[in-house]
Amino acid sequence: MNPIGLAVTAIAGGAALIITYWEPIKGFFSGVWDSVKGYFSQFWDWAKNVFLVIHR
Image (cartoon, one colour):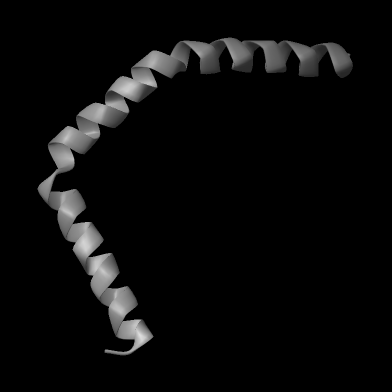
């Protein structure tokens, strides 16, 4: 098989695995986001305030 065929096969295989295991993948990333969204929110508020102070 040539390199293009291997790449297409790898992408299709990866897509099939994601579709098959979507619920555990979704649960994992949902848990990750729940644990870091507070930090992102704090950083966004800080960055917004810095921008507003600089551009007054």
